[in-house]
Amino acid sequence: MQGAFETGVYPNRFAAFGHGEAQVRQRLDEVFQQMFYGPEDVRLYHPAGEDMGYLEDTGNHDVRTEGMSYGMMFCVQLNRRAEFDRLWRWALTHMYMTEGENAGYFAWSCRPDGQKNAWGPAPDGEEYFAMALFFAAHRWGNGAGHTGYLAGQSAYYLLKAAAWEQRCAGAAHKDWVALAGAVIARLNAAKNSDGEYPFILSEETGAGLEYDALGSAWCLAAAALYAQLTGNRSGLAEMERTEAHYYNAFIARAECYGGPLDTDKAVDSEGVLAYIRAVRRLHALTGRTVYLDHLQDALGYEFSFKFCYNTPIQTPPLGRVGWSSCGGSITSTANPHIHPMSSTVLDEISYLLARRPSAYLAARFRDTLAWSCQNHNTFDGEYDYGRTGWMSERFCYGQGLLVQRYPNGSPASTWFALMPWACASILEGLTGLCWGEP
Image (cartoon, rainbow, N blue to C red):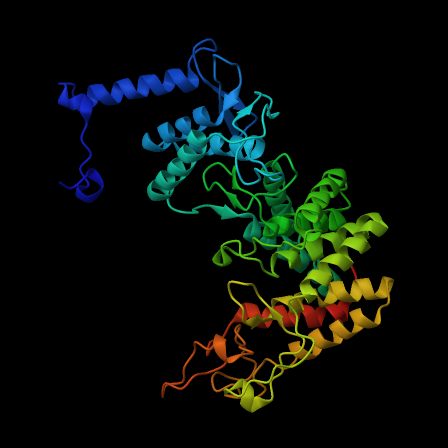
């Protein structure tokens, strides 16, 4: 006998006892309204701020993972996404544990103000959190929403474009700056209690749905650049708190993950590029030596992905054109080829070199600069595809990475595709040196 999942037919037990569909729906709605929005002495749900809420255990006057996860199950089955997101954000903000032997689990009991009563998990709460999230992914989509990585990155580059336009063309784009400021304000409101920006935000409410990712440091980079361009330093103390969290949780541990979504939080070199920009801007704002220390540490981590020697590959086109891996950085443990995003921080390397001269740092700068200048077609078809100026994103320094093939079936050492973002990464690094420090 097939179950409901296979047949798509879910039996209504109330209907089996003679209750009509409309009657059942009405009663469910009444119960939901009573639990979530009834009188204060009746309801279990209590809002917390604009975008969070919790369910109280009335017998113990605390908040427990079993109640929060059961509530999320209730919400997803009744298609109440706003309430689901608020409960999940409260759980992530206050119950999720990032340190100790139970890191990665949820504290089974918290006070209504969010302080933890215990530092251990309860299996039923953990299991129903997982079940509710599986149901939510099926009903509303898996990962649907905004990402801190892209939202922060977009705001950062909008501000950087405004700065370039002002410096190079004398054109003021106050509307660009205002738009970026509005995005940053919304991202600031979604930070958790550690000061970390969200990895995933709800598309409907803007609430943070998932954290624990360095890629969201793009939001901090945008906030710092906004303060630098506008002179508005009212949020500086909070930015410094956020930077300390990112440094201690990721950089100091050399555990940097959570860049773009396609890496699924694999260890990578992309999230750290956002942090490098942020800490450079914070030093420009404050002059504090600690930010040069942190910039040096973050660049050191990025350099651990970078080749300081050539690994000659014989497979064309890279083996034929004399391409060198020296100066290129592996993107992540999930995508272990070389791509050009690390070239975007040439300006930040230059910034540190001007303040802390170092033969090692200068050598890595020259490696990155030389690598960046070799990847475009200097004539049509130089890399066996495309026109002059075209550039791919995937460069394979070893035989084990080959996935692209020529029409005759033989392997190729690069993707035959024009990647505008890859071209832009190189150009950002090179042109940054031309217009100097803002």
